Length: 294
Image (cartoon, rainbow, N blue to C red):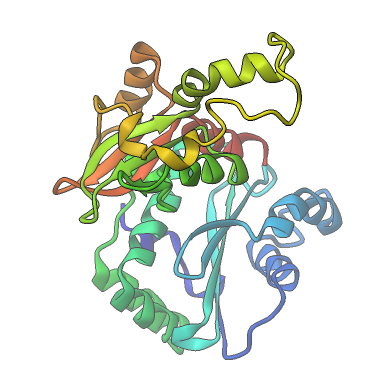
């Protein structure tokens, strides 16, 4: 199924001005519903959308966001969009389904990610001046809803990677300040060399940890042998060099099974040997639960 097949002219709005997210979400909801569709008020639906509105929706890249809500009274799935600000502006999509539909939601999100990743296409979509032109550009792009959910549909492209030559203190800082359980280690060309995780850090600092928690007679303020370990050693000295990688087109069910069976929580995603993203159990669970409850 083509992405464009979900859109009809009456559910496409185009404006040269950029409006606040809350106003646009309300407008998109009004485009999707009608008086005869609903037994409950617009206010109730907007309250259900509030958490998504505060976060700005699901950002799929390129100033493209997706909001969604299950509205049983409508009885079918509808996709509305507002394009604002021309080629440099933003696109806000709103997907309504009659019931929570994780697979369909992820399929739509994946198609929008594919559109956002093509900068030339995205510029032409944003530059459309009429709903018909908007649909024509999308139709010519050939972007479809993938019948299976793949790694590329849910992975994080905000690459938590670090060079193998960095000081150990640098990776510690990233993991603590950014709340990351692990970071992929690469060379300057983005080739994956390994991974360093919170478990590696526990092993490195276990003696220091024991002392800090009172298992040592050493007094506070006295120098400890490991006080300068973060500066003396490099990431490559402690990283795990045996690391499994997956590609963007790997089915998400296959990756989830692999993670459970191998007891790993995140895997580097590579294309032609270079890091392009990271997929974690958190990513998979978050995207599925988002479509059910959020």
